[in-house]
Image (tube, rainbow, N blue to C red; front, top):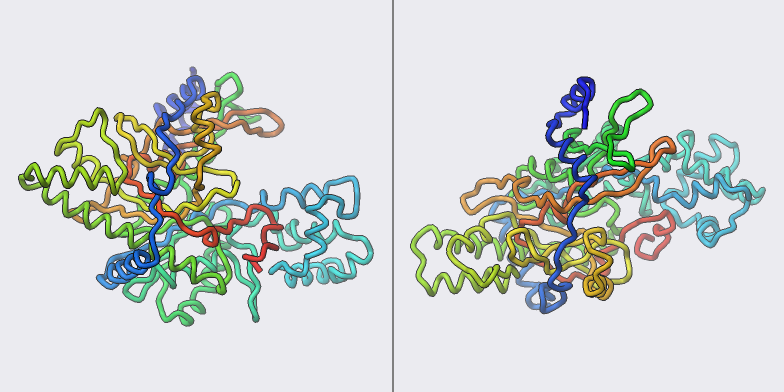
Length: 500
């Protein structure tokens, strides 16, 4: 593969090593290996389902941990644009008919007044078109209403990040997901009277995001009697990946330059690595509920955090024992903890102090999982690792060999689903932060088909943030109620009872 001097300059400008690009082009040729599965995780086999009494203990433990003055951060990946949410409405605006025809379109217009953004949209229609939504609909001008929602001269919802859309209506105002995350931060992640919230935002929306946060944060700080420390980061250009043609040669733009694309949410492991914290909560930007439904979410966040800090305390205690001269009985106790509570099975039953230290001295995460209700996405599995051991992982369908009947059965009959509800411990037993990129399984990326200017291309996604990027972490799954999982994938999802 010949890279020109100009190519090398372009690569260097992004902070990417030439070897990295060569390696990525090689991966287009070879593909990624599928993962070897042991079983789908289930309650009693990798998933913990705490009783009411246990839940109370976990919440108390979390409250105690925060009272000790530890630094807690809420990390919200918020760079996603909302364009996919409005796919159906873009199609309607472009359609060769003028009245709502599909079930989706009919529902949208029949219930339009229920949207939290209705008043803002009505104001945009009156300002730009001189008529209210009701008047426009009465005249059959449905497309004009949809266009005012999507286009820059109206609300511009087709281009804004999801975090900036009005999701929920309250008595006096309406709130965006960004605001709901600030409220959540105050309710379960504040310690020392301060809530640390970090948003990852795309470059083009950074100024707008900062401005909106600045407008809203003080009101919530007063309401909840706390201070906010709100920070932002962008996905780094050095984590972009090169695009390839279908024949695996570098894809080039019209001017001959190489095309780089964002490497997917797995790139955010670099952003996560720069967060100064003892414990970090991770939750997607669109998984929020109005205040009336927050108590359940808050309780379960405290539960999974209590599980995490309890396990971490034990791991630290055992690592200190391993530093001294452990007895056979102590080694047996530690091995039992690693196998039963951290769900890590050794290769060939080979357990010694080195193995135990390796499995204990690494980042730890507790992930909430919900009962499977047919939502697309990853699930919890017991999986073989590079070193031959078996541990818990969150897998995406793309990591599973669809030709393997046994694996497909595990995937389709899996009882639980990953809603991206994580709490992470990122420091070692001596109080030093782990270098998180060291724990990524680089063989777990995947290749997808995309297009640019009408030309087909292959895109390379880095190991996902909660998949391969956290592959070599200690992982524990806790069953959480479905009520804590309310993603918004399409605009009509906002009409669901949970978002009203």
